[in-house]
Amino acid sequence: MTSINIQNVSKSYINYPVLQGLNLDIRDGEFISFLGPSGCGKSTLLFCIAGLEDITSGSILFDGRDISGLSARDRNIALVFQDYALYPHMSVRDNLAFPLRQQKIPEETIRKQVAWAAELLGLDQLLDRSPAELSGGQRQRVAVGRAIVRNPAALLMDEPLSNLDAGLRVRTRTEIKRLQRQLKMTVIFVTHDQEEAMVLSDRIAVMNAGIVQQFAEPMTIYREPANQFVAAFIGSPQMNFLPGSAAPGGHGDDRLIGVRPHDLTPAATAAPEGFSLTGELALIEPAGPVHYLDVLVGDHIIKATCADPSGLAPGASMTLTAPAQSVYLFDKETGKRL
Image (cartoon, rainbow, N blue to C red):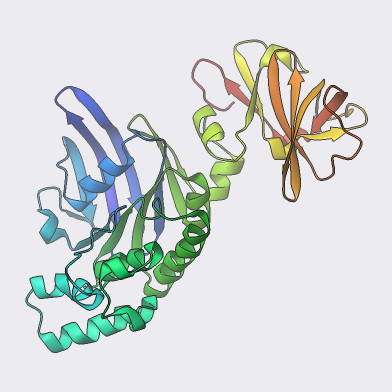
């Protein structure tokens, strides 16, 4: 286990900046997610920490020691990739043992470490199978087992659940979180899935265009987004945005008003206090315990929610309300939350 400090780290390819002056302090034993859209630099930052990419400027410290010049081999970091990267000609047992044999660890120690990892991950009955005989979830567990078997200082995971179906993804992320808590290991998890990041993480670094937009606990990011990008990226469905002049209160076109669909619900009349909009119901979307409502307000489609759409029909006029504390105001030019 280790703490990781990223100090003013930048990375460029020729004249193209990929990471721009990043500063992050990751505490020992934390589960951290790098979250953002494709091309935002999250995997590049992970590879810089692992030593697979060189940084252009800045420093990366493990427990206060600058390791920027160390090779990947000397950083004691375990990395799990999206495609599992298992050796197809080896059994599960030999895949787990491989990194230890590379370090010339005594065979008795290898046997004990493999047995420990297999029991921890529920692979005891699969040790003699080849990767081709495993399901996607089992292969991912073998990849994680191979990473932790040598007791690394930190575990880095690059979108490890992307190849799994929805149900298996949920089960596997639960196993990863349980494993991290049991081992008290520092984990950095790269994902573009905001639900994964919210569920798994102690803190999330939301990234865009090589810049950390916000680094905080999941619910802080959800309830107190630093800017419009974070507000839009976190939460599903996405936050509604309206020009200030299009909403009650007349905030002006230099500002944007944001309100989340789950905070916006139908009402019989406009609320005397709080936020209200009137528009035409365009579509009702059933989604299990809630129904999403698409409401045309002027030239904008606003998404709201309700538990029971009985009595509602497309084309009807309707009023939507939200509590005042659930309405966000953003600077239209800079995107900063006001």
